[in-house]
Image 1 (cartoon, helix red, strand yellow):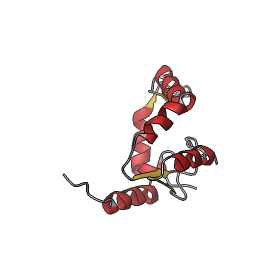
Image 2 (cartoon, rainbow, N blue to C red):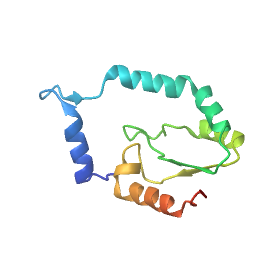
Image 3 (cartoon, rainbow, N blue to C red):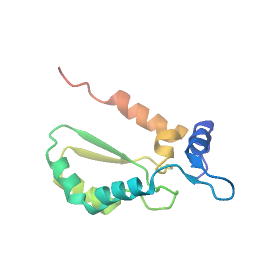
Image 4 (cartoon, rainbow, N blue to C red):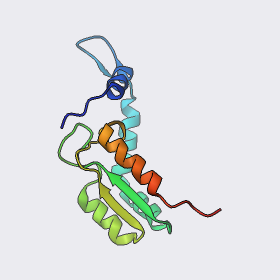
Length: 124
């Protein structure tokens, strides 16, 4: 899958720091590790939060991961558990996307925009 765009190029260029050949991401390694720990190690917290929802929830997922590996960041088994526990949750894999292209690739962004447009408007 190759879906490079000017937007992705701009994002990569913005995120890079250092001098060649030692380029690296600007993000804080400690922050990424803490976020991953909270998201992955404390799955019960997220699961419990999902149980509190009573409104319809659409989970759009990329079937490929952060580095385009063939494993989603939210694995099928985990999402199946969420779906079994949260009857208002609908899971949709956005074909041909990864962690970045689901939002910044043409195909992924089109699906996300379409689902937002189709979403029911909450009564005020």
